[in-house]
Length: 79
Length: 248
Image (tube, rainbow over all chains, first blue to last red):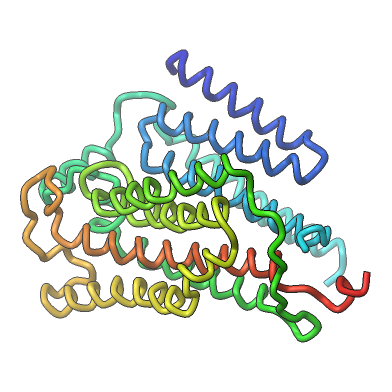
């Protein structure tokens, strides 16, 4: 295992911890997005650029966006 | 079934899973080694079919049926989400007032990135057989990119450029085309989703036989599905209000 992969794995772990320990769901959408980006970097280093692309587009854009829209809808502040 | 029996059934199930997983992990190759039996077979098959991107070859040529099923699952999920998100009886649509638009800078970035993102999305779909990417990735890029219009402008302009009924049809059409290619190759070559088109020149845009065709079908289906799905979320947020929310 190369040093780069070890660093990326550590960052992914730190990102996951950050997501779990973010209390406010609105902020959690942002940390989830950062976590998705870190996963994407890890996938690139593991020679899986195809998976990295899916991960970055879905994990850092679509899922946090849906979470944000849902939270705004539920809290009724979107009107 | 009593509580104890349920725990016992769960325990037996978990033990079975643990044994099977343990056996699988035990015979797995170590992390980061250079011996990859599956890669050796997949790369050889991919090269013999003129596909430079091996992942696309696995997805659309060697294991095309898996991808068709995956696409159908995605289609079913979008339809289910649409059913859940449609306005219910207590909710009604209303037009939001003008309100203040986004900041000038946000609007400029939105309008600048919109064409760039759409071109990148189309490029990722079309070059799936040559470089990393393909219908799934490119389709999602296209669906997300279109919503830069919402970031940069108003909801009204997004609505005008994105007729939802049309995207509902193209989403279904993508799935149908994929299955139709499969049936056509079944009739022609006797095997479902067999790569029967000419393989073209390795590494060129026109190569890999049916792979680019299936990539475009998936790109259309995934892109349209993403647009329709995000449209429902935005509609719920912006246009739908319950009577209760109006009173408060």
